[in-house]
Image (cartoon, rainbow, N blue to C red; front, side, top):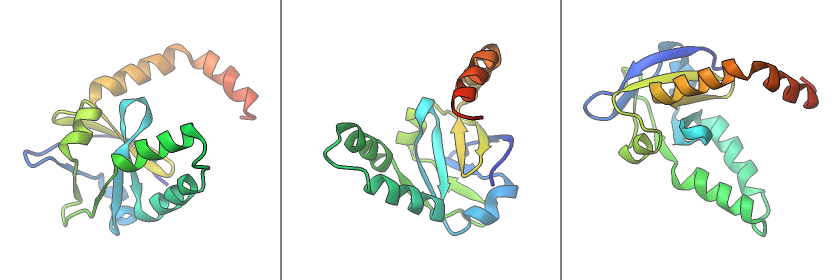
Length: 143
């Protein structure tokens, strides 16, 4: 399970060092793709394969399903961490997430989210200001 928040930098070759506590789970490979809310999502290979199977089972007659599949797969990049736990973040993905040289990596149970510090700060501020509204919405979902 991925938990926590970590600050890391992108090196001059576009590589990001994965936090040490996550490296064992990602050593067989990681898939990075565009996430929702302007961040990147990084999945371990087995978790990505399960998600990809679910997406592939969506009805191709549904426009939202087709567009979601396009969004997820067209932006995906497969990588294997090097000995130092670094993965390449392609420029196209960095541009999407507005990532320059600093990142915030957060663990969200089955995936990592990779954020620009500015965007992550906006999310945290928004959530902190709307906590009561969020709790009310989650109650409707049974949490």
